Image (tube, rainbow, N blue to C red):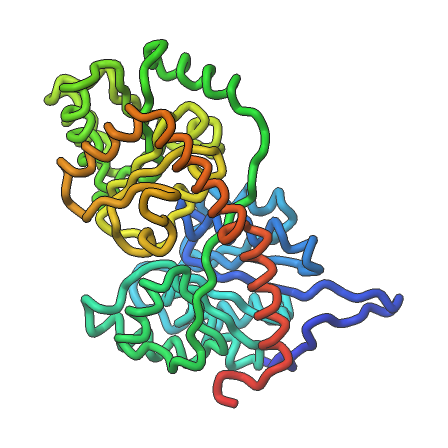
Length: 391
């Protein structure tokens, strides 16, 4: 296979016009999740930054592949089987030869392991983003991380908490490591009508206060905590409902828990929603009870929707949320304190309004998609002018 020569950050076509920078994002899949939604959002911003975007899915396309294509990106899928597959490096290299990108952007270490090596072989610069914490628990993951990270010119983390783990586990030299926070598009539309429609669709009683969350129904998100917390809150106020937006393997268990606690009529399961903002509009309080988080988009979207936030202080949340200014943080696992904080917010309109305003200001200043995309664009162009990871 012939090598692709490194290309300039922005080339010119025969007409003399600047040609878009070719960016390839590499992921395991475009299944529904925060990482995947960020990739789709960055692809959607590509044209405005003089980029053309493609996405390589190593394992499967996922539900977000079609929305990604509708934004103008080309999506490739290599159908990788589980386990280490060294032959995938050659298959990724073939796709890169077809696209001839200026830069490859990998997301999570498995993507870097395969695409980083393929890009290195072809002389294409690589930037990487780590979206979660993986290294402290397993030696094997640390070893693979160190091997893969050699191929990245720049190694980004979406929170300082994740970057601290990467540094502590010596995955990359400090000179390569930096933090780029996730960002979202801001929405200034009036969703009052949508909120009323959602409440009617879900059978939420008129006048009830709605506590809600958005996320995959899985072990790490711990929606069971919110159901038990609702039971505590309803001892003081019976007009409170819980709205769970998302789907996943724990759904049946969560339904059973709601029945067992006598809450089946006030715990509402919305399932997966491709447009969660209309469901956020129906909430009076956004709550997050996860056991672990990176830089959750759901909190940013709740802020963008002018909703107060209460959350366990895990992962990147303490660097996102200014306690009692843009949200309330509770020590992880303290369910009684979480219930007290949630009840305080829904009982105090001024506090709820102040927290919602503080959150909206925070996302406008620090966590906009425009800011995130522009930061990455600058990094793409910088690595295209700089020596490779071994330089």
